[in-house]
Length: 226
Image 1: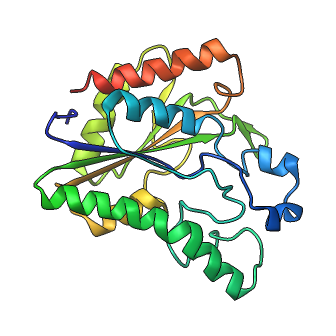
Image 2: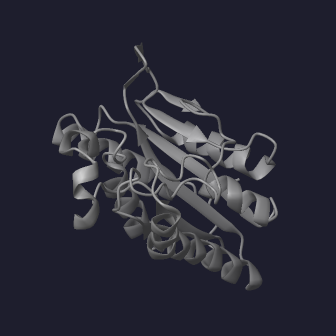
Image 3: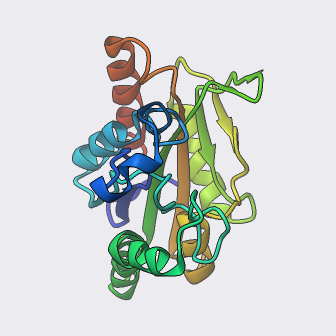
């Protein structure tokens, strides 16, 4: 599968920033917010580049995942990092969670009703070292191996990305609780193709020139799939 001109591409970035409203500031240290637990470093910059190049709609959040986790389905135990009272949880869901999820689902449903096939690219990044293990993956392309179009798309994209260690379903499994997985469960494999891309944070946290080169590489490789 390539990216057809008739396809409807959307780009999302669930962990694009580490902002916390002033009422919650004392709950999280600046160091914690700046870490990989607070947000996905570099993810929003890449998401903006991809969306701009493809003229695709971009859905993103700059609220820290420590306040409310937007990449987990409703009811998942990781949605809240803190044991907030039920009233606070409900308010955070109304303010951040539901508008984000509903806007993505509505855009997908609208495109499908118009006869389009939707390609959803969700942008994330990961810490180079986790639990004492050094991760060798530069770019991870996450997909559901059972969905033929997703697998085909990722393998074609992987072949286009040069000069990097690109792994399939690393450093995380392609099927795990997420926005993409929930959309897979709502829409057919023929009409919805969901891919999560994971970028090693050694690039956005490293030299600026190297980071710009990587982003340009990913944008060009995606656009050449058309």
